[in-house]
Length: 108
Image (cartoon, rainbow, N blue to C red; front, side):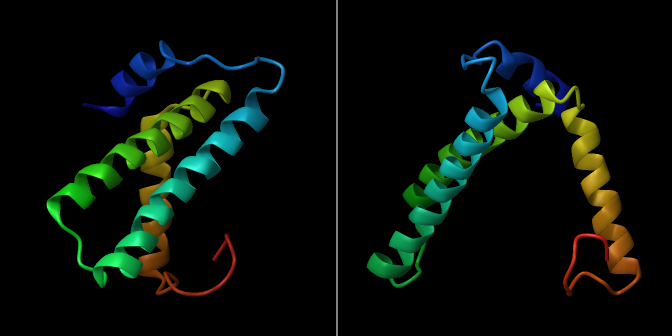
């Protein structure tokens, strides 16, 4: 599925308060990212950092939730999710070319 289609289709499932939409969406994104981290924490703690197929499936579900929130934030900001992804790759390849993948600061 491409990002344009995902963004359009996922918007159909969006139910949240208009007035507080950015707070709601950013808190939701943080919460879902936390759930991804929690899954990995438990794999480290309980399974000696050994992932199995079921772990991957559960993490994929949480990553889908992260994607949903990223998509809704993009929609609310009138941003094309595909362009957001393209811009991110351009930034990363620029850093790679300049040997700046490691380091500090957003604008390296």
